[in-house]
Length: 319
Length: 255
Figure 1 (spheres, rainbow over the protein chains, first blue to last red):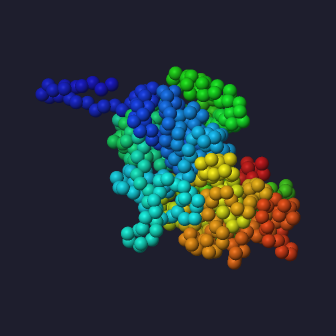
Figure 2: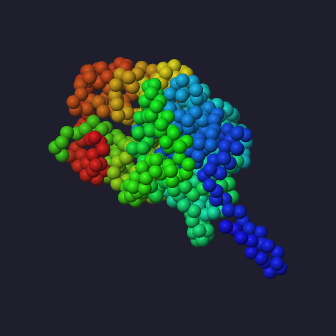
Figure 3: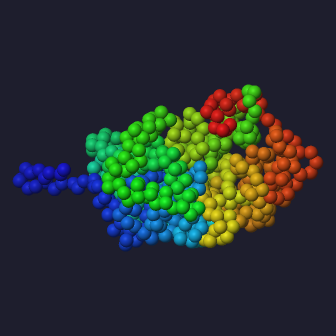
């Protein structure tokens, strides 16, 4: 808690605001912003470092018609958002669970319920770079021969003003809200990724209107001050931070816990059943894991309790 | 080294032999076979081969993982990068890269977007692909799907996600694809390469347990079989020992 302390001349010293908030308040903040402009961006990559608790919170708070961006590869979370009926358009180049296809993504795109744009990594990363750097476009000179170029809605062909060559340009991608997951933050919102990879999280933080981060734990500010080069996203770019134990589950938050591949596989089986016409299991999954839990504690119990998570922690430690 | 060589082990050995010392390369998304090939090359003849371009340098995984985009699979690595650096790698290109898809065609083009229908009304929607640049900014790439059937080897792909040789030399030149493109297609059944003049795929060698007729029957286009097709050179004792003892002790390539 911030307590104003009197200064020498008796005036109250102004205090710095903590950015720590609750999962529910963070979800409401995001929902309100996304109602203005539905562009949501998710940090992490595939089954690593994904802000899944924030996604579940947003789905529980109610969201629809979202345009979803990500680092160039996503799977479980975008598929879950589609299963919950929250997504209109997908701007993610690669959508896969890696060992199998994303069932709800596939079903919804094949049924014409969701538009999945044909994109590539350089378009998305370049668009985030343009936004982060405050320039009107980012040139790209490495895309040739692919049918993606005929359909990619974010690219334009331009003449290079120096060489005269035909190259591509992508305009700024400016998410209204970005969700990130990091391992640690202080209460001011300085994020510390302790994982090996930081994906596109730093770029997204600088490219977005609003950044909300979940972290495995809030650490004392001395931890940050003692090792500033370890801060991956300075608090300047962060609007709110939420301490959520196992907040990336079922994706990994290395080195704290490994991805829960069995959970994701079981979910995908339910998604495949829904694709084949039996949505009962998938609906029950969403009720049990997304709309049902009133807190992250409830979610942890629904998934399998502390013994289940202890196994994921041990796997991250021991490889 | 008595137990039979698995098709994936044969793939790994073929790919490893083609990687040179001192090169820079990366494995892409479906990484089990490519990462094993890189690791085997580094152990046997290419100690200065650098793994890089995918947000990390020189990982030291304790065992093989299906994806390299997994902190467990990286194990320890020499350096980590981000997507900001991936932008530069994509433009500068690598020595080699690996790709596979839902469909592969007679000119080495790869489809990861849709089978049947159109992009926005697909009969079957695939995953798409993240990086489309390494296939032509890199000196060359390899196509190495772990399934080889008449369903995923088709005359013409429904959508070109990853360009190979397009429809041949003229189309490739017109599109500005100046590098080698796909060099070898290595599958669980055989090795294919590309005719130097037409850039069409042709059968180069068949793995033990397969005949050229088998391979042709499981391919949806003419593989230009003329005369005797050699057997793929099987793994040597040394290759197999290093592969099984140091790179894949858990037997992921034999599962």
